[in-house]
Image (cartoon, rainbow, N blue to C red; front, side, top):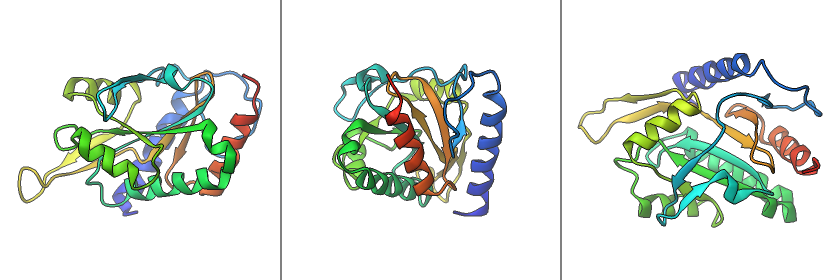
Length: 200
């Protein structure tokens, strides 16, 4: 991860830690940033790559991991999705109780077909979500994301600096954690196990 990406990840993590101050006492000590009781990232309603409307309620009963990125991302996105795939493999049968959602912040280039093929490269049960420009901007606001377009040599060759981390929701659809990309996958695995062990 380059220094700019690391800065964005750490800056986002710091902002999230501060904004999650008003929360209930957590039952566990998590390795990721504990967002239990945070007043933002309360919902997600976007079409998937097949055009089907999706909300967090669709995955009630599962721990849901949401990662924001784009298919032409050179490092953070493929690295994180590969790590999440590895984590689910480690979980064995419990992987069926975890849903990974990849939300594009680049709907102008990320077509539904492209997104479907992209996430399938990591795991067939990963789901990608894609809103229009207005929906995408609203989600960016709702999740307090850092998203900055960096111009390239041509109009379509831009890159996007974005929050490099995963938002984790418990089985009731409540925001619980923010796992920065720098977090060891083994530690995130422990956090997911703790959330799976909680009584619904």
